[in-house]
Length: 85
Image (cartoon, helix red, strand yellow):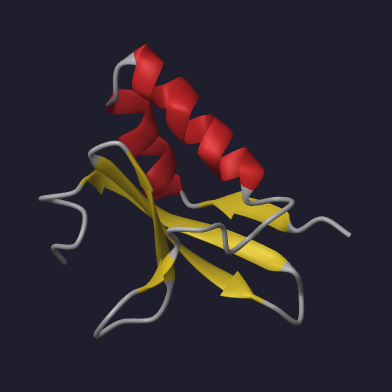
């Protein structure tokens, strides 16, 4: 059974600002989470809840609810900025 993916409003805005080629790459990576929520290279975040995947110099931060089989994308951004609160 596949997982349900929800993208937060802030993450959608961050994705919309990126150039189209990077939008496509990140969108493909997010859709791949539907079948495999913890792909190779996926890491647990330190000092906060959630996980991250890499897409080039960009990071996709997400929470995974294993009981509800739901993934919530919380942030998308460049690696030097995405972890700042």
